[in-house]
Amino acid sequence: MKAPPQATPGVDGKDFKSLLMESINEVNRLQAEAETASINLATGKTESVDEVFTAVKKAELAFQTLMQIQRKLLDAYDEIKQMRV
Image (cartoon, rainbow, N blue to C red; front, side, top):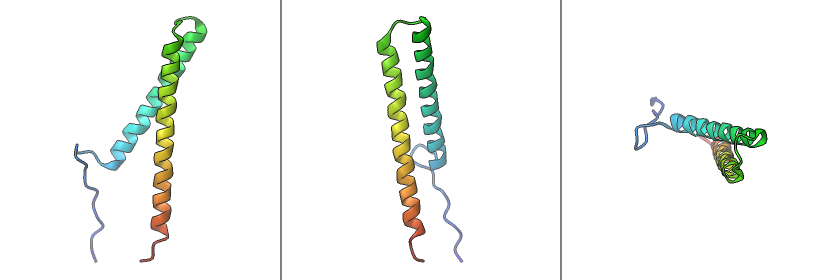
């Protein structure tokens, strides 16, 4: 019997799990920044609607990208499950 394949690090030495966790943390950070910017606008701490709009759009785009990655991963998993060995 062969040993199971080992994960090989990418070009920068990070494995897939690390990259995925970094992406999730980045999305979380962007969403927190957008929330803070919105609260600051609502409470009058800032008057820059452009900054709030930009922060919200960045968070939205990052979240949508992460959801697309999730869908692709689930599709790949389903395809692997259907393979006959």
